[in-house]
Length: 384
Image 1 (cartoon, helix red, strand yellow):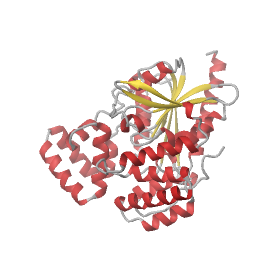
Image 2: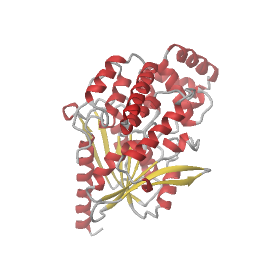
Image 3: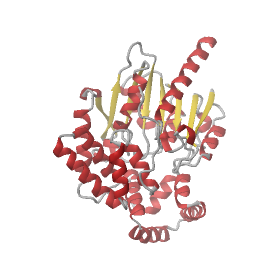
């Protein structure tokens, strides 16, 4: 099963909007996205256009398409937007009613006073392994459903799970994110009584999954789909190296007032900065910009990387606009005690150079399948 015909398209000259439109291209007609890309002029305008498009589809009875359009709108809504919760709930309602996903496959797992959403998809035929799969800083497990089906059709049971700070765990239970990803992962493995599995993390999951693997021996193989060694480096990349380095130098020096005042003024001028800070504060649970950027420094694999003893697969795109490709090399060098480390650079010629290989996710699915099959053959030869 091909998740999406390969291709990363230029729908908008704004890199952030263009990435989101390519993300929606898994489910929304290409020509329609071309029209939307030509029409939108800012993040705020994008939200209003997506709401209008979603409401038109609702009136036509195209409810699954409307759901994905609502998801696109909700993504760029600040926490102050009066429709944010309503729009997320519409996406969830339409997704679970109008995909072929059986509603009973979704479970709410208790966690620290709230609940973590999961989707359990059985293997087709003989079960070869269990894949446990998490998203990143702003993804939803529902967006991983098509990818999970590809693994299911190849004999793998797939458990998609949210941790705190993700999906309904954040929006319905107000559970904010932790860098100690072994905590929610343990709860999920315990709940499903999983004794051995392969853990896959995408986007920020490229940090989260290896972090969890460092503390849980039930995880036998780990995939970093978008290798991320240090989350704060993504902020530096977005700001430009010099400005980013100055920001974190001031964070470490404790210049709270200066940081907060400067970023408040920047957010008033730039809707992108305003949205980024709003989203970051909501996901992290921090009270101001200073605390949020200080919090980002916790997401650093280096201090625990030596504890990772599993087989590891690291994947990164050469033109990732969010994560510098150098982070793959940093992660590779840090896994000094891993049983094996395999790296895969995805390129522009493969339509897979962007973040999460959004233009050609099938490439990564195939790579992961081949990697696991190779390890299975090795283990047979070694009698493991």
